Image (cartoon, rainbow over all chains, first blue to last red; front, side, top):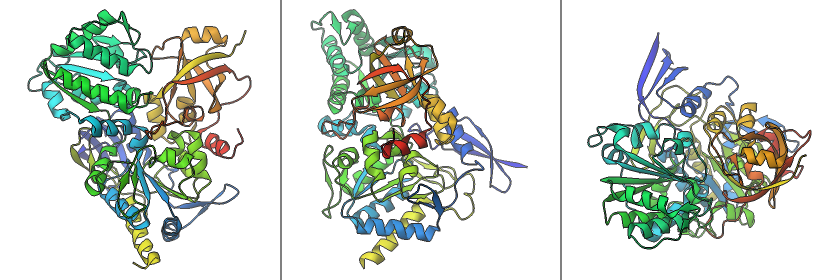
Length: 437
Length: 134
């Protein structure tokens, strides 16, 4: 016999799908099948069951080989590394629960750390822009039920948020959107003909990196002012067609992603995107939303925003929170040799930071807390595998529209394996002992 | 005849990269999904190389060997695409211009055939890179 667990939340992307069904063995120890998930989410659940999964902490020796250590040794090493460091960097925090993030914050305060989350290489530019100009946003439920104009700008949900379009943005039938995709007009702005662009009514194939110019072109077109013949590589007639389509809707939404945040201009591109949304509200109702990547990067920003007043790039070294992206951001700190220890939890900078930053991590005392073997783990001195949040332990996570959703435990973790929250609590206790608090 | 060509590199998620990442970054499937560069058919013509041959991608920030494949999602001729990951991050622009955000999109690169050089797995690639062995 097997058990079918319903309403399971997927811990992969910021869409945080909450309609998965997971079939597990009677004893609750093994996942047999995953239903309703996308290919990536399904793989995440199934890979947690891999027979070659690491289950115990390991120290990397000088010759590159690994030696198994106990959790208590790993706790001691981590606590001593953090307590001894003058300015440790504690990075990641996006693939874990808000509960663990809260304990992490307390630990960061205790050791006066620099704390940063994956927004720093994702929607950090967005967070800066929101602080500059605000953001008119909404929930995904409102979009499902109301939106008839959907713009994907510099994002490709067909690959990065595979069920976003079917659950919220293009295909679902909602309260005021009974015709589903037939009642919606979709505009995609991307230099590539992405799989999302193939679904669009209008594809604005701009030249890479000229997003700011196109936002300004659209704002000019909304007002009926003169446009040059080409705007960001697009004929002005097409820009006017897109502008008219946006203005003619009853409820519109701009979803934007890394194409805007990671191209030159960065936060200024998002300023322009938000200003475009504001302008559209002179004609109809429009909102804008960041396509957040990790399943709980939004929660990390929420927890830190609540605890420290800032969503990322925290400097706790002076005993109170400072924030200055460019100075207190992970890549800048690493490249300028400004930190003397690195603690990573719930992220893989070894794979997703420029290699110049990864080289710095490799040369410092370093700990990686991650269920998987990753490039980060491979260059750290200590690797601590932990239970998967959302699969082997529950916890609160925030969806990309800032809606909190409680994830569910569906199976038991391997025997003796710690959760990241429990590991952090133990490290915090040990740090307090070392510091005599 | 094989040539060295100049292109504008962008990187990001592909579903194959996402699936193989969750399946284990130490596995060959991750290398096969993310250790690639997508070129347009015009790009291949200018490069003078067959599809699915290994190429060396270089920028002022580094260099890496990946497999060149024809873009599944069409690209402008002057553009190249790499899935996000340690291969793309060997050549990406780390400058943040005081925003905290490296310039992952819009990196000037050169691409040339890599002869017999092979595409390294993610773990080996990063370990060799941090030791300066690439």
